[in-house]
Amino acid sequence: MAYALEIQDIHKVFNRGTINEKVALNGVNLNLNPGDFVTIIGGNGAGKSTTLNAIAGVWPIDSGKIIIDGTDITSLPEHKRAKYLGRVFQDPMTGTAATMDIEENMAIALRRGEKRTLRWGVSREDRELFREKLQTLGLGLEDRMTSKVGLLSGGQRQAITLLMAALKQPKLLLLDEHTAALDPKTAAKVLEISDKIIAENQLTAMMVTHNMKDAIVHGNRLIMMHEGKVIYDVAGEEKKNLQVKDLLAKFEEVSGGEFANDRMMLA
Image 1 (cartoon, rainbow, N blue to C red):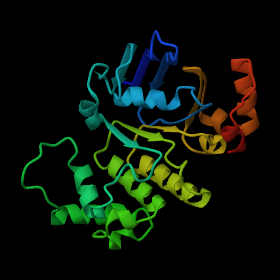
Image 2 (image 1 turned 60 degrees about the vertical axis):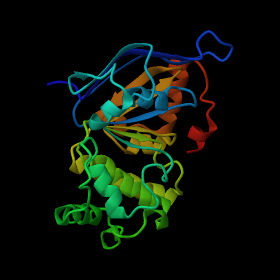
Image 3 (image 1 turned 45 degrees about the horizontal axis):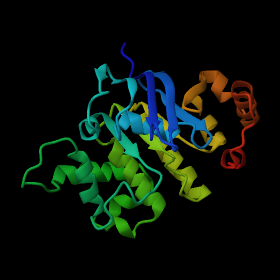
Image 4 (image 1 turned 120 degrees about the horizontal axis):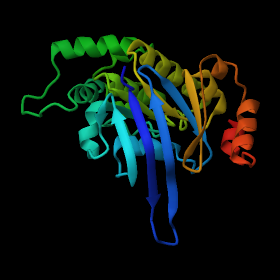
């Protein structure tokens, strides 16, 4: 069985040869099995979001390979990787068009990767599908499909973005601190929705988070990054039995220093 994702010794240096040179990725190796839901933690500058950007093709890596479901995408530009990926960002306003209706936003997501024609529209079949998907959120949005997305709360918009990201059954779902801008209650609801969407669609997913408790509770696997490398990889029952103090101790053991990132320690 092929891996859902293979990251082979990828490196990335920004501003090479200048006073601002930054080694962002320093030999990242990671294999994901189909259906893996991996949470990613680490201090600021550890390489978490940089890894997701490398997978998405935001910029080229310096060396290494990225393979999704057996297809080497290392040299593909960002727009040609879109058919393989779903992505949700930290800012709830990023993933939706505020001036368009809920159903129009979802129709755009449904047609992602297809050839565009002048006959674009929302069919009766589309509306039935969207209503069915929206009902699963438990937010009553199935009765507001013609409402402008800009009138919704941040949590509602992020929930819709999650639905949109999963509509085309992507090979890999990337969640980049997608609850960080939400209040705790709303963040918990969005994480609950994330779990449901990933499980029901049997998606392979990666979730960057600064919240250690969330990293332990959600997903079947957890990795910790530091200075552009994966320094800890745990899964299954061992992951379920982790506590925040265990992660802090592991960081000190592997990195040789204290975990100084206040956001993670207080999360």
